[in-house]
Length: 133
Image (cartoon, rainbow, N blue to C red; front, side, top):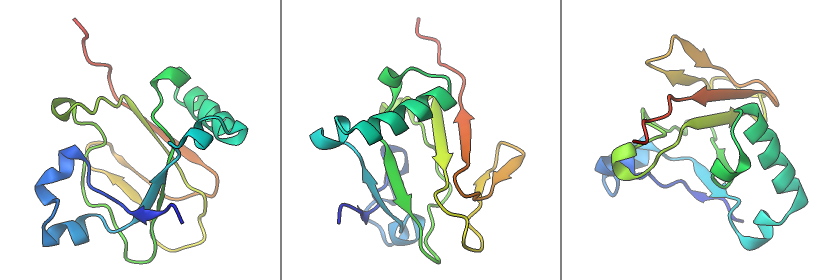
């Protein structure tokens, strides 16, 4: 019941509220950010494993997010980080919970590889750290 229609992030705000937003991102998603999530041993264990996978401390992690894509659902070309909008992600970890469907590739136009779903496999995407001084 916590899965809700996915929202567009700050970097994608040009599409928010328009009819294009219906086509731009029409999946469902949820965050594990409630108090009971943050203290749940399973959620903590998964979060630690993900932090280990991208070689970053837990303190830098955002709450876990789950996105569900049904047939014909998409998230159009977008960025996961928007330094000008205050979203300073240095890593994204995609984990596919199922590979029992056709399609589903994630395309990275600036990286010469697509990521196809593979049951239980992860694909870390790291960005260069910005200069802090």
